[in-house]
Length: 126
Length: 126
DNA sequence: TCTTTATATGTCTTGACACGTATATGCCAG
DNA sequence: CTGGCATATACGTGTCAAGACATATAAAGA
Figure: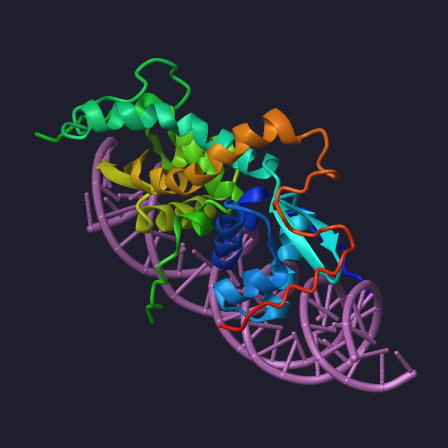
């Protein structure tokens, strides 16, 4: 019986340490299942199952070479992760430079009275 | 009874869609729990619990403003994710440029009898 | 054919985790 | 000090994925 294959986001895929290890291994060159198995010292069914997940999610593809399958990377899903991460890069440079020391003094979004201001916020800090 | 807090990798943290949404929300400016709750339309305990996870993992920090807590981003864990991702960037540019069109014909491993030939590969035991 | 090698898949168990509901804590105002 | 708002946490429940182990498929070589 085949289970319905849940569509997992790229983030869930790379949450698994063994899968990240496999991806890191494949970045140098394509590898067979046995090569991955030996280098990462994990049982062969484990490797095959993770590769199955990675293939279904588009992280890798395989070609047949006699009895063995050669797996190699595909870029799209990792690019998608990178795209999500991009929104924070601007924040990094700003943060490290100036904000680190005096965060407490900054006031958040003074305009846009969408929230009820009736809680006065006397700011009793000093 | 307090459970032992598992140290989760940054990848496991951002595997959760709601947590990614919270992080995306905080990239513009710091927010209170209630503001997050309203914008993301999720129950307050859910927001608090995810914030707890994010705080324990170093993704956010909070300051107290009267009854409310203001949460803001911290850069380190996301930078760590970005660092892992960096190893694949080189691969992207190479891949998109040349390999995209004729993947099937490629035989990038040189001097290897690939075509159905005796690929016996003695595979010397270590 | 039969055997060996390489890989895939099935089953079962276990444990992590997300969510809802209810409740606790803390801070402010009257 | 009492009531109300903002946030945190405890508890019970269901889902789902990962690992261990066994087995199935397939190609190669004897």
